[in-house]
Image (cartoon, rainbow, N blue to C red):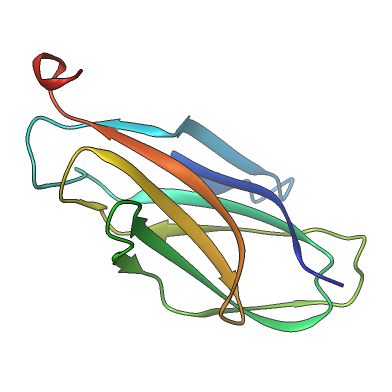
Length: 133
């Protein structure tokens, strides 16, 4: 049974409410605008992940990849998750460092479990409006 990605979101801020256990996700996005290239996004980024069909111990990693060159620009440290009921989602949030952005265009945020791609989302990066086509 393959792990299923139920949610993979980028956000400005993610925290977990201590009373309810709910995740609060603020400022979701799929696009970044920067003044010039190369650039580094100005602050860390939150990533919310919800997975199902998790049985046993799994190693999770996130990778920020240039869609043009396929170069991995940022890796997270491996995280371990454990599930014993495939019907219960495993949810967590990760804060990643500011994203390196060498050029305008498309990037991917990839989620891997035990080194195998489980899911990805696209991130579009634009320069100043006068440089857009």
